[in-house]
Every structure is written in structure tokens, then in C-alpha cells.
Image (cartoon, rainbow, N blue to C red; front, side):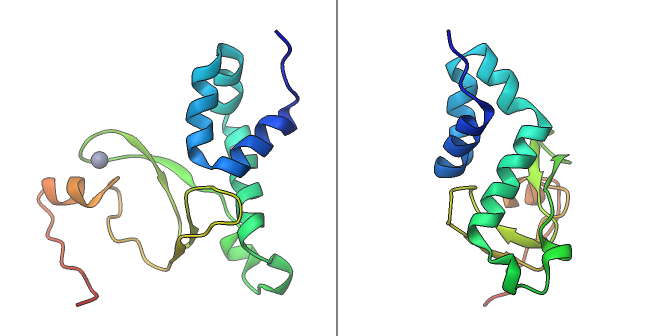
Length: 126
Ligand SMILES: [Zn+2]
């Protein structure tokens, strides 16, 4: 089987977002290994960030053009994308979900895990 160049895989991930990584990794062993590489994930993440933010008119490139890290949830043990304050989305080209200045569930993958571990959650916007 012919292995497509890395740039093709990156384009696919940049068009379709995180779901493309899962799809590719299920396609074959070679893709699985490539898209599982932290360096590939990083490239894909920055390609996405660059597609949603015009950095040349942004004063915050240093602060917000940063990679996520994988953190293990304190409750369920799953690894999740842990974002520093900054831009957030599902990795789809040109699509931005929002900007997060604070982390609501620091150390947890979701509100469910946060609450299950005995923390109290009170939404700020009421
Ligand atoms: Zn969790």
C-alpha cells in the first residue's frame, strides 16, 4: 500500500478536526502510528490555530499560540486535552468554539468527573 505524504494526513485532520485523527488511526497501522505521534498532533493543532486566528493582527501570539498538553483526569484516569487559557475548538479548519480565560474544572476531563470527585460546581453565569 502507498503511504500518502504527511502533508495529506495533516490536511485531512485540518479539514475535519479531531474526529479525523480517530478515523485515520482506525484506517491502518501506519496511519495509527503517524497520527498518534505527539509531533503530528502538535503540527495539526497549530495548523488549526493558524486557520482560526489572524496572528498578524493579534497582540497575543506569544501567549495564545501554544499547544495543549495531555493531562490525566484526577477522577476517571482518562487522558484529555488540557488547554491553557486561550483559543478552544474541535480542531476543524476555520471553526473556533471560543476563548477561555479560566479553567473551570482544573485537572478534570469534564464537569461530571469534577463533581464525582466531591467538588462543588456553581456556574458563574446566572
Ligand atoms: Zn474524567
